[in-house]
Image 1 (cartoon, rainbow over the protein chains, first blue to last red):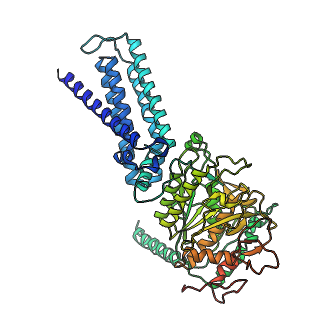
Image 2: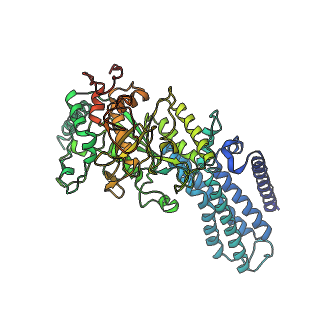
Image 3: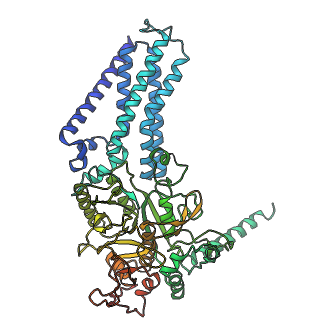
Length: 207
Length: 390
């Protein structure tokens, strides 16, 4: 019962987060044209001081929701949670160390730029690796929703699907300088009193 | 073991004498030697000769100038910090060491390789010859400023790419400025789409105008900084290229647009031109450091011209820290050599109203530039500007 309660709480939290994220996202899209972001107020970015972590959280919540929809196997869910937690801890520590010891925002920018798409991909590999060696024939307290092979496949494809979505999502925004750490820091610059904004004009060419 | 304490004290004493010697000579006149480059089969130093940089170094050495610390911004593709011409944290401060063929980011985003290394090297490569005797066939070079002083640092910041937005370029400039750079080299830009010209990655009129407004605002925010901008390589009028072609408001004279010339002081075929060009500098086959600890003998483009001017501007700033961007620009353009080219490449070095020789360009003259503010003030073709207190 305790575990079921925990699962329920997690479900509520993740649903809440997804709703919160989508609400701000829709509000943002309504208020400003996607193509002319920097000509409008950067309100959404102001809500996301650490945007890549928010994105990673979204990927985590969506994957969790889909997993709980497809399977009741707690071992799989537990593995997923543990792996996600580890990835988040690693990420946070990594970024914290970067901030403390490097104090070079440029370096931090580039690292986070790389890590964004890597987060779901790392999760994918780790989850598959953790899950494949385990005896999922014997779930802890309930009958499995699918045969072991099918379960493994479902997990693999669900996470893979989420990863691809996250990567596409990330890159589509990266191009426009939104959601990335670049976008956040630039928004600090662009959302001030600075009168003209470069908008979505592409970056310069070396001459 | 008996004398270990004594030995240690002796060691400390020698160390402190050495440190004192180093400290006392940090502002002393430094030596340079580029005979190793002159020994090569190809003429590697034609650009040095053209802008008379050796004469400038010799002149400064003879004047025993006290050089102040100067930070030079290089907003470009990053630098290869493992290159022998750079000593990280000594002569270069960087945000990311991206400019390398081994970089994952280069692989992922197909970034231009080596551009930032070349640009940063031309202006501020280490002067190894000041401390060591170079082999006669050694490829090592001097940056424009390092032949005069070691009291400088290059602040290299990574600019945006074609897949990011212009905001990232602007952010990089801001970062360089925030880290103390007041002389900032911008060997990049955007070209407006021009009819009948197939210019890759050009901007529409709307985009161009919007970005021009942005960059004008930017130079107002950073009015303390002098921007040295390459004029662009599309062989069009510079009014179609920003930031170099931005109009100069009277109150804000802080961009020097640099076009490229060749060995015989003609306009390089690719170089942009026009009445908004301020100065020209060698920009064909310029010798520069390249990635993988190599050297490039044929770096061409206005990107190669700009750092030559930036280096001299930094020397001026180091000599007279109180000079405003407009004053440095004034010195550089007025002290330049008048040249005859097919298209206008600056007019500050001659009187356009009295020009029987038919000059229509000004090519950098480092020697005259550094001598301009030192007595006796040379009177060339224009009235010299007021001499500020050193």
